[in-house]
Amino acid sequence: MLPGLNGFELLKQLREKSNVPVLMLTGLGDETDRVAGLEIGADDYVPKTFSTRELLARLRAVIRRSRIAAAQRRGPYTAQVVVGPLRMDPDTRTAALQDQPLTLTPVEFEILLCLARGCGRVQSREQILLEVADRDFEVFDRSVDVHISSLRKKLGDDPKSPRFIQTVRSAGYMLLKPWGDTLS
Image (cartoon, rainbow, N blue to C red; front, side, top):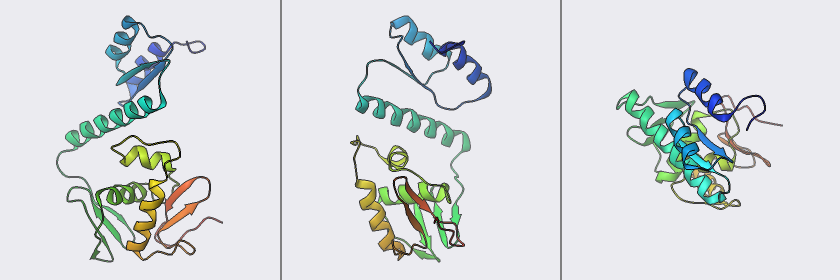
């Protein structure tokens, strides 16, 4: 029901070039449409009308499955993430700052890893939650803020003059590049 091209054709073209996870959100809810969408390559198919919580849960499931598949293709070793004095190893789930081990909760580790992989780019709360949350969350969920506060303490970071995690007002958080780039 797209202008000039339908979603099934678009998905076929996308699958010729990419393995990116696809969740089809469509007004076509008949069983034949759902089966066709899944058989052409959609990872999930959600007909309108849907609840926001269900959509978020399905998005997390698609992302989780795609990560598992990518990890299996890569094999057991995942490259370490190094940002200046911060070193993180996703395989051993260890983190160190200036060669001093950091004691992080599983969620703190995932949030810091998310920020480190996107170093220098703003990550919204929603992006971070989709990346790390294994639970349903509300639109105004502020748990990320609490975890960021805890991470700052463990990194010895000052939110007013950050060296590591910068708050970008109305946008989210960003791990600063090692040379201390900040936003004005």
